[in-house]
Structures are given as structure tokens and as C-alpha cells.
Amino acid sequence: MRCKICVLMCFSLGLFSGAAGIYAAQEGGQTVALIGARLIDGSGQAPLENSALVIQGETLSAVGPAASVKFPDGTAVIDCHGQTIIPGLITDHSHVGLVDGVSIKPENYNRQNILRQLRQYEAYGVTSVTALGLNGSLFYELRDGQHSGKSPGADLFGAFRGIGAPLGAPPAAVIPVSTDQLYRPETAEEARTAVREILAGHPDLVKIWVDDLLGTSPKMKPEIYTAVIEEAHRAGVRIAAHIYYLQDAKAVLRAGVDIIAHGVRDQPVDQEFIDEMKARSVWYIATINLDECSYIFAEQPAWTKDAFFQNALQPALRAQLSDPAYLEKSSKSPRVPIFKKAVATNQANVKTLYDAGVKVAFGTDSGAIPPRIPGFAEHRELQLMVASGLTPLQAINCATSRAAALLGLSDRGVLAPGKLADFVVLTGNPLDDITNTEKIAAVWHRGKKVAGAVGDFHASGD
Ligand SMILES: [Zn+2]
Image (cartoon, rainbow, N blue to C red; front, side, top):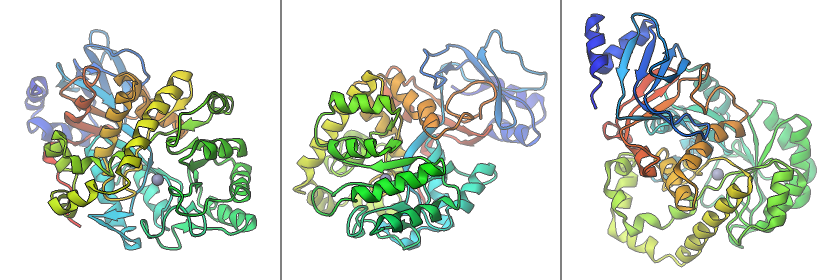
């Protein structure tokens, strides 16, 4: 629906019509009110029909039923009847500056490429991004810029560098990074030194990799991750662990890790794991998209033709994903059955853990390799969570207020007075069909409309 009242108001204020009028209103510090939408506030509560959201500056000054919320004379009013508003999505596990087009190389960790990625996330309604390791020296400067709200694109959080295993994960052959993006300590003492260097810049989290990459490489030794966890905890910083196997997830839990950064994918989780997760109040991020993106594009489901997917692809990736020879080769990979089993196990486990009351947050591993597509991956993850058995409301709750809670952020994730005005206006109701989160009419970030329909967005070249 067109915003009739907005247009009328903007004319009456002597401003330009439509979006330009809103931009002009915001530049002047004017209050903006969105009236009439169904509001899914991120808290997990049932939606509020016919809502009003009032924005002053970067934050929401009032949220409630349209009939009772008041706003000052001269407010620019946008009619959103028939639309649904959800909070901006928050990913707790993504990466920036690793990929450009179909390339993965250390040179991709540069300002222009990272800001390009953050603008893509934002255009897709992901307003906060956690770069969970493999960050270069530029990370803290970029994070400050995004926190200031003056730089376009999603807000940025992260783990600075990461701590991997010598000759192990993360795989240097798949994700080549420079020495200023990753440590691979050989001893506990080296691990402690690495953590101290990481902590000097005040990261949001510390990241470790504890995995043998399907039996192809050595795992991180327990004395290494124990030293990392002790050293980070001494400074009050939490640790997120890359795991694959239930046994490793249990081992890092007992060593004191705070976040399980990927789903358990080798077998069903058991009561012992559930009890330990709850007793230690540890967060769980499933990243179901991670394994699915290894085979799904070759199967060419109908949505691969949609603009929502196509517009997220940089030209080189679009060319690769429309090359029959490439698709044929990837569909014949002997690993496809392993990835499919991993997805099914991951989905069953996230449902079990959610229902048991474990703290499930949200992440995708988008940006780690080219097929994990910034912005698109987050909507796909919501669909995969719903296919796991979570309700759309639960999945949205994981990707908003729970994802903010994982990061320790109280200023976002819920649309309520005093919170940042980070939200997405949808033309469909995602509670009817979770794919309606893709029907983006507008994205608002820190009180400003920063993007319209995704149909107007095109991932830029590499
Ligand atoms: Zn990752």
C-alpha cells in the first residue's frame, strides 16, 4: 500500500513527496510516526494489530496501539495499514571482509569491501552483524564507525581475530587469511598471549575453532582451549566455539565456553547436553544455512529465480551459480549426503534444545565463503528454523531480542520506547508464512529509512 497520509503530510509541510519527504523531515530532526501496521515487537509476544511507532532521532519514543499513542503536531505520519513491522534482524555469527565475488583472500579484508557487505546486510533488513573471528587490524576502526551511526550499513560487532588449531580449523586452504586475522597457538602459553593481544582492542567476544573438519585435520587440544577460556574470562570476555560433534560441544561446555557457535550435527543431542547447556546458561547458534548452501543452489529451487535471491549475488557469484557445469559438479560432490544429514540433524537438535528451554540465538555463518550470502542467508535461516518446528514468532524472537541478548545489547532487538529505531516494514505477515520476511518494503536503521524494497538493491561487482 502507498503511504497516502505520508504523501499528504509531506505536501502540507512543503516538502518533497514520498521517501524524499521523509528524508527531508529526518534531516530536520522531525518526529516520524508509522501508523497502522501489525507490530511483531521481537519480544516473542503476540503481534499488536494497528500499532503506532513514533521515532525521535535514532530511537523510538513511543510504541503502542495507534488509538492511544500520541505524537506532536508537525509529525510526519506514514500510513502502514496492511503492512507488518519486525525489528531489524541481528546475526550473532557471520563474517566480513573474507569474500568478494567468488574470491576468498586476505586482500578482501578492506574498508570498501566490508562497507559494501554491511550495506547489503542492511538492505536485507539485517541491521546488526557479528563478525565472529577472522578480522584484520581494520576491525576496531570499522566497528567504531558503524557504532557511531554515521557510516552507512549494518552495525558491526565481533571477535576480532580468532584462535584456530595448527594445521586445522579454520581450514587455510578454504579460507586463506593473513597472519593478522588468526592465531594458531601450539602451546597453552602461546594461546594466553594470543588472547591478551586480542583483548587489548576490547572485542565483543573471543572465537575458537574446535573441530576436525569431518576427520580431515587435527582438533584444537583441550589444554589450548582451556587456556583461552581462562584467559578471556579473567578479563570478563566470553568465548564462542565452533564445534560440529556432540562430544566436542560437551567438552567445551565443561571447559567453560559461553556460546556454541554452530549446531551439533553428528547425532541427536542428549539430556546430559541439554542439562549442561541450561545449568551453565550457554547460548546456542544453529547456523543451519551453513550446510544447506553447499548443495541447495545446484537443486535450483524456485526461489533461486527470485529477485530477492538474485539481487544478493555479486556478478561473479551470479555467473557461477548459473553455470550448468559448476552446478553439475557441486551436485555430484560425494559430500552432499553428509551435508544433508547435517542439516536434518541440526534442525532436529535446534527444535529439541529450544523446546527444552536452552537459550537459542541466531546466526548463519554468512560471509565465510561465497555461497553463504550476506542478507539472504539470514532470511533462509529463519525459514530453516521454522522448518525445524519453531513457530515463525519463535524464529523471529531468536533473530531479534535473543540475538541482541547474546551480544549483551539492551538497546535493540525489541521495538519499545527508548530502543533504537531499527526495523523492517514488510508487505506480508511472516506469522502466516515465514518467507514473508522477504517482502521488504523498507528498512529503517537508527531512526532513518535506509532502504526500500530489495528489488531496488543490486549487489555490486567485485
Ligand atoms: Zn564462522
